Image 1: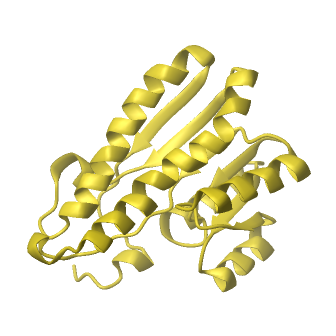
Image 2 (image 1 turned 135 degrees about the vertical axis):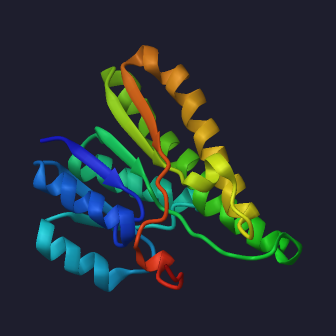
Length: 189
C-alpha cells in the first residue's frame, strides 16, 4: 500500500484529495491544524490517519514526520495543499499579514518536503504535488501577498522538479482557478 500525506486535508481541495486518494487504495495521512471535528468526520468516512500539525512550524512538521516514519514507514506522495487567503488592499497589508501568508502558503511546502524527501531520494521514486493558484500566474488585485506566495510556489516547484527529477521524483504544481470551498465562501458569483 502506498502512503500519501495531504496537508490541509480537512477542508476544500485537500479534503477532496483525501477522498480521491482513499478511493484509489492509498493509506492517507490527513494533516490538519484547526479543523479537528472535520478531520475526525473524514477519518471515519475514509479510514485516513489524521495528524495534527501547523505545517508552518518546523518542530510540528518534524514531529509529524517522526510519527509517520515510526508507525507507518515512508511517504510515497506529498500533496502540499495547506494554505490561507486574505483579501486586502496592498496599502493595508501588515508585515504580520505578509509573513503569515508566506509561512502557511510557501514555507510549509519547504518544511514538509524537506521532512520526507530524503526517503524519496533513497528509494529513487516519489511524487510531490504542490497546490498554487491562478493568482500565482496572473496576480490578483487586493491579494498581492497571496499572489506573491502562490507565485513562489510555482518557482519552488519548477526548481525542485529539475533537482529531483534525476532521482526519479516527479514534482508538479496545480494552479486552480476559483473553487467553491469554505475558504472562498464569502465571495459572490
